[in-house]
Each structure stands twice: as C-alpha cells, then as structure tokens.
Image 1 (tube, rainbow over the protein chains, first blue to last red):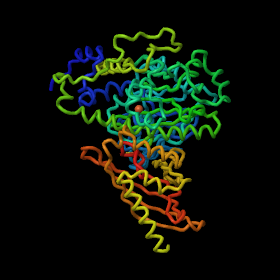
Image 2 (cartoon, rainbow over the protein chains, first blue to last red):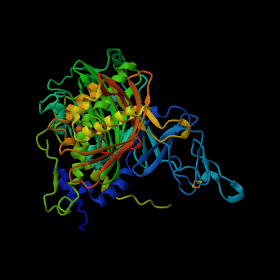
Image 3 (cartoon, each protein chain N blue to C red):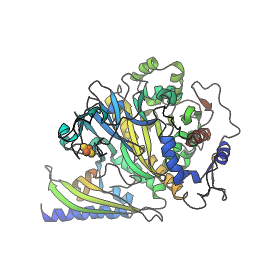
Image 4 (tube, chains in turn purple, blue):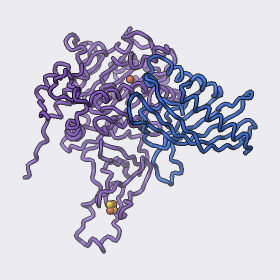
Length: 444
Length: 166
Ligand code: FES
Ligand SMILES: [Fe+2]
C-alpha cells in the first residue's frame, strides 16, 4: 500500500477536500487512537453524577476503562479500571457508591483514593519486598473540569483544560453557567452502538446545520419545522481554537420568538447576574446552539414544544470510537437545577421525543451516518492515490465568506451556518495532531 | 387464569406483532387506548444490593398517544429515512402471562420479546430483546393496550436506533 503523503493531504484539506480514504482507513484509525485520543481532553462525566463521597461512575476513554470516584474530601479522581495485580477489570458497574473497590480475582482492595489497602495473605506471601504504596490504581495523568464538566487526558504534558477549551469557555458559560446551582444530569446517559465513523458524527454536530432540512425533512413534511430551505442557516457559524466550533442558530430576523430559549421569566434575573451583556445578547437571540469540542464531544441546546411555549433542553454526547466504522453513542441530558420541576419534566419529554435512540430527529441521522461508512470501504473510496477523485466536498463558504466583525462573542463568526468553516478547521487540527510524531523523552 | 382470556390476549398480542411487522402502523394505533402510557426505561449494570437494575429516571421514550401518533405519521412521510428503504422486521412474542387486575376489565400482561430487523442489502441483522409489562383492557368489546413498559436487556443497545415500536 502506498505510504501516506501528508503534504498532499494537507493541500487537499486546505482546499476544502477531505480524501475519502481517511474516513475509515485502519492505519489512520490506529494513528487517531494514539495521536488524537491519546493527547486531547476527553469528557468523562458531569460533577452532578458524583454526589457523595464514595460515588463512582465507570467510563471509557476509547479503549481504556476508567473509574471516576469521589473521595472523602469531595475530590474526584480518575483511574484505569484495572487491578494493579494482574490487570482484571476492577469495577463492572456503571455507577454506584462504595467504600472500597475489591478485585474479584485475588481479592486486592483499593480505597477511594486508589491506594492499595488490602492484599489477601499480605506479608505471608509477598514478603517485605512489596511496598503497597507502589501498587495503587493507576491514575489518569490529568483530570480537570470546567463548569462541572470533568475531562481526562492521557498526556501528562498536555495544555490545561481551560487553555484547550479556550474560546469555547465563553459559550459553555452560557449553556452551563447561566443559572445558580448549575446543571444536573438526569438519570444516566443513554448508550447504544451505531454504524458510523466518529469524525463524521462529530462533524455532524459541530459543523453541519446544512444537513437539517434534508435529513430531517420528515419534520418539515409534518409541519413541525418550517419549510424554508435556509431554516438552519440563520445566525453564525463560529470557528474556535483547537478544532472546536459552535453554530449560533437564530432565525431570518436574527432574533428568537422565544427569548432565552423559552426559559421561564423566573430565571431571567439569574441569567442577568451570571452572564455578561454580550452573552445575554446571544442567549436572548439563539434558537439552537449546536457544536463540538474536538475530538468527539458534541452538544445541542435546543427547544421543543409549540410556538410561544417552548422548553429548552441541553444534551452532551460522546462518540466513543469502537473501530473505524462503529461508535458507541453516549448522551447525557442536562437541565438547570434551579428550574421548576414541571418545566424540567416538559423539557425532558421534548428531549426524548426528538433525540436519543428513539428520538424522531435522531433516527434519520443514524441512517445517514451508516450509509457513509457503508460506501467508504471499497477500493475506490479507500484509494490513497486518489485516482478515482475519491475526495469529500467541504467547499461551502471557502472563498466568499468573511467573518462578521460585529458578532459579540469570541471566535471567528461567519454570518451563516451553512458553511464548512468549522469542518475545515477540524480537519486542520486533526491533521496537525495526527502528523505530530510522539516525542521521544530522553532519560537524564 | 381463565384459559379463554389467556388465549384471547395472546392472540391479540400476536395480531399486534403482525400489524407492526407489516408496517401497518396506523392500524396498530387503533389497538392503543387513548390514555396509554408507553415507556422504555434504561437497563443498567449496578451492584445487586441496589435491587433493581433499571434506571427509570431516564428513558428511551415516555410517550402518550399523541406522541405515538406523531411518530407513526412521521414513518409515513417520504423522508423518514429509517423506513426508506422499508424496514424488514419481526417481533417474536412469547412467555405471555396474564393476571387479573382490581378493575374487572383490566389485565396485567407480561410477555417476552425478540425483535429482529433487516435493512437494505446488509447481511448482518439487528436485534433487541427483553420483557414487556402491559395493562390490557376491553373497551367496547375490543382489546386495547392501556399501558406498556418495555424493559430492554442490554445496557448498551446494539440497534442503530429505536425507531421500531416494541
Ligand atoms: S488481579 Fe486483582 S487481585 Fe489479582
Ligand atoms: Fe441531525
């Protein structure tokens, strides 16, 4: 097989063309795991999922099983969910509360700080040479959080989470930091497996409002959404640092019929207290925030209901790669703690009706993502010489759109959401990471 | 349980499966009582001491008749891509147990389901299985489903989406 000509890939990406073979190529997938997922911040949990000391959840960072646990001091730590003795998966439960974690194989026990506290038959069989303090659970090198969102990073030298999120923090403040008491996850995340490539699903949320009127045309046919072909284009597509992006979708008038996404008036004074003028301006005009944190965390803050009485709902989702053509979808539904219970209930109903495994809008997305990978695995699509013009088209807005200087938020804001600016920026960051050789650390 | 009732209700459930498998969704709607509560909570992996391994705070759906009607009508549009090309599907319903309720017209009905689906020319098929708990009642001489809770056995579903009715 031809070796990868990264210069040529770069040239194509610069010109709005993404070689189709990169989507599902197995060698690329191995590189992605090591150089993208091994170095970037990955979402693990929201702090509301870990309420008491001893509360834990188990998660996956691609193939690494992770256990997140709150200790007696209220600190949340993350460890590889694998016993330090012979590597057995320590905890098989999704969530719960424990005083200690005991391994089912030989009985080693770890406390909430991951320290090895119990070895069956201890000194009698291991002698004095084993120092228990060397055999605790192996921590995820970096765990940091922002607005209650806890992320992990396997690269000890990675930039801080706040630097990584960069301009995205400003938008996270609107979605997650607007109300007193913050957000809470309802129940547990929905999880299911779909045939799709993680890049395409991430891109769908971060960068592709253009798909809305076709993929979700059934909603138009049912008169649930307007037929205007430009419906999801109004507003701004905002390119942020490090491959992140957000679409601030408004309407043809640039305003929303439902101020603050249909939030009840009782909440407004909190918003005014917690957000600045520019953030309030955007929040008052937005219909949908949809975007992504590179590589595989997506979010959507939308409304359901009838005109005049809309209910806001917020979801975060991780596309956990299971292979080049499969993802495990995890969706967390979140809501402001401070909202009245009856609003929360209606918001939740609006969310599950449209999104999640059974949501009417979601169903048609999964169909199309499956069809991408189905048609991207053959000799023509996978050809590294590009002899079949096997290139995907990201030309939208390439040479005619300029950023809107008057947009009040950070980032480069293009005056329409029907453009491929975020997608191209994701491709560039993807390329930057995937072509960076691992540093060889010298042993002093 | 009166064997006539057991027989009638089993036949009713098989007829329901027939309508769904043959994509006669509007006819299927007729089998639902107007105040139906149709929900599917999440199965989770938790310690045995927690008693239940269901999480009912989050569900895949929690539909009223109106919600189901919208889902049904959507499947008849030209652009519901999950039904275009049409789904080939089978609902295998078994282990039907009928118990009477306090109200004379209502019966509590438990059944197992295995759902299989084939899409386009894909050789691999999808499946979903678990248990259903229904309240089935006679309204004006016709059996109707007044309540259905669907308990999937997987905590991570292996179907691409839950567009099917279960
Ligand atoms: S593998 Fe865990 S105690 Fe041996
Ligand atoms: Fe979509």
